Image 1 (cartoon, rainbow, N blue to C red):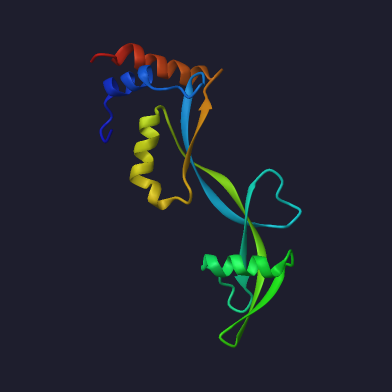
Image 2: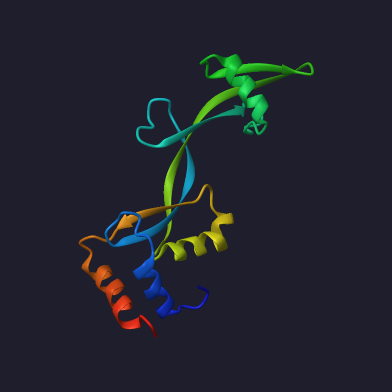
Length: 151
């Protein structure tokens, strides 16, 4: 929907899959990386990464990263020699925290947002929240459905 068409919006609200949620609101999130300590990441998704100690660059080569993980056997630091050159790596944990991007009344709206802006987001996803007990938003949805259906 590039231009707001209330009739189309009303139809989507009436006919869309509600994802098993009363009064669904389709929210788009992305993931923001933050450094975390080994013992301080309760409840968030984490990834392990290896950082070159000398230039602070993350190891991009997945094969090298896997090899370092195997060599390290649980150590936080490892030295690797490649073509006679020593590289020092340090294991870091990166937490991925959810960051709210936008809310849409319909799944189609959330999908359209991702299509137009998803390339700017890190690991975007749609999560469905309920507007239950939010009379203001429920009334807005009901008014759109009741007043703009079949326009």
